Length: 365
Image (cartoon, rainbow, N blue to C red; front, side, top):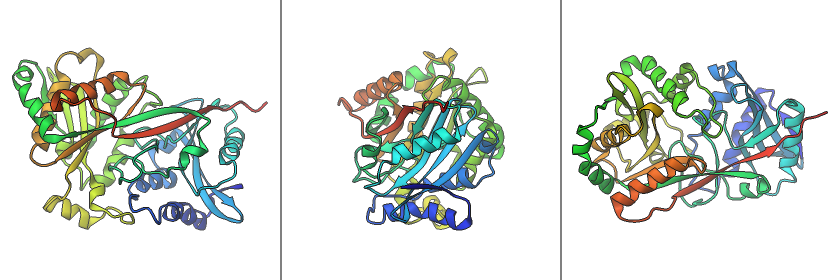
């Protein structure tokens, strides 16, 4: 097996064609995560100001059999990321070859993380179960045999939880009187002041997720670049801010499962925008992020955000799905399970599972 850097236009075409080959017989696959791949590989983006991104092709028996990119973000020091990995089954020692390349390119890094795509906000993880289902928008879909390639590495597990919207909204209605007693105001994002509100979003992210597994400090411009391609689909209600005495205290990000409008080969386009804003055939939403600044926790901010969400999804969606949540984030897992059990009376189990893999990368002497 050979590793070849992507250097020409033809190489880039081959790089982007790999998933089409891998998933040609898997109707569950969706192409939407490839938009992030192109954003980070082609740039230039603000992310490139502090990160190095090097794409490669994997050749076996004289033909393209896979791809990946090595990413070293100086805001996540000491780590080489193996990102956008896609490959055929039956590759001969791909991990060993990738490690050799990572050591050679980034000799000062002592850790290698497989499955982190530049930043957690861009995407992370390999699917480890429920391969029979299409992914939610913003979540990965990967082949089942990828686990075998990385089975000897340390696994960081992530989960999602699925819940019925009717029961969720009913539970939040029961809390309405309690919520009104807290000094919390919830407002929607203002798209006319998108850059300003995304600066608030970024600042809250950096403050709330400090110490979270694989979190790296963000710049507002990076989140603007991430949101901007979806500006015709994202509505103001999809980003909610909680404020106390006029100061940001937390936020909640959610959006519909736009993948429900696509088949395995389609990319989001103008007709999907019109369909969504017209009759909206989507019945599931993803609760992507909820976070509260440490100094405002236990002040009802969380409940206020959930209640504001419930008023926007009631009678519009049948299902919600929260996550992904890293296994190390015990508080978020317990909170999710507690709310779902209170709403449904059932002890919830994770609905989807993913893994990010980590290994030491001994330095070259």
